[in-house]
Image (tube, rainbow, N blue to C red; front, side, top):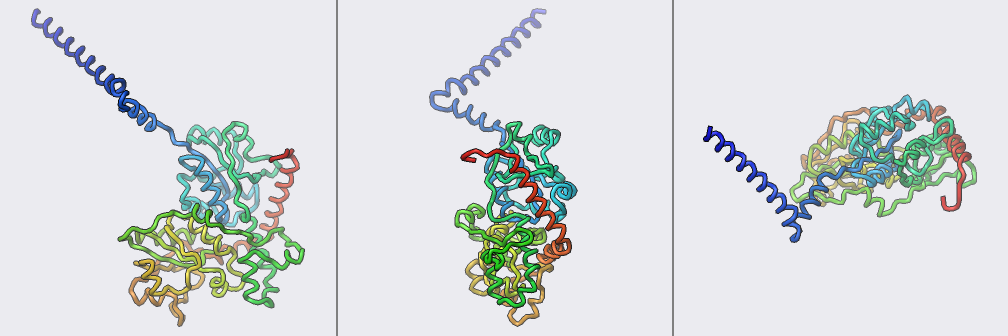
Length: 420
């Protein structure tokens, strides 16, 4: 009995000693260490570690995705730590705007490829409903819902983001002027209407119209049936820097080169760039200038001008750098200057007869045994996109008119004060 009591007392004393020692250690870190900054630094580290990332949400149709969409996503990502993007379903687009040019699976490929996007939600609703907003906040841990300063109007003329604004969880970004999916459709429809006229116009005249934003109809004071115009995009060095990675290849990097027009940047482009990037450490993309594209593809091309095409390619997460206005032929000097290890080309392209031509643009890389033809994952070209629009051009014209009418009704219902 005596030995048992002594054993219990010893155990109790040992436990008390351990507890006191533990308290001293904690005190040493939090209190005794405070004068020299150790304790304060420890607490700050703990707070930083526990800090919740700000998650922002932006949705859209992202039909015929262009640099304006990409710039919106870039701005949205800058408002938080993680960007979640909702892609509206085909059915919702048809109900609210008209038929989409690109189906959902292609639009998902495009959005997933944008380098500022962290997560994608498929089949998002066109309008933010109470139920979906609750789902965003509770399941996706969204802090803010983002949209541009242009109106997103439902068929009844109401604001699609009214509930988010009312909840105080809405933030706004600046719309990228000079481009929209509606505008791009209009450019192509304008091109079709002027095809008969184009036969009598000079090659260089038409090239200037589409690359520099001039149309004879508008210069003469006339108007287009769809109310759209060709591009008036003015590139700046700041915008190019915003889209660039700002990093060059490492000293021993395997540099892969691929070139093309990349007009109406689409899912087929994205997928071949993804494959190309997987073959090396650094993907360099050459983008041909407007004159070259016009000479090789026809006087009505390109639909998007050089700098518009360059920004779309730069926004792709698989691309490390672009050559704006790359030469048609890949020369020995070019291979040496950029330290190119491999030149690639897809099986699906506007023109795959290059190897039969006397002026084969890839003659040098072929002779150096650094040329490879890649199997294109998707059978889509710029012509594919144009044909989709032309085959259903009446529906797209009605879509343009419907959007204009919805915006008119939206603005009629708003009161603007000085400074808006």
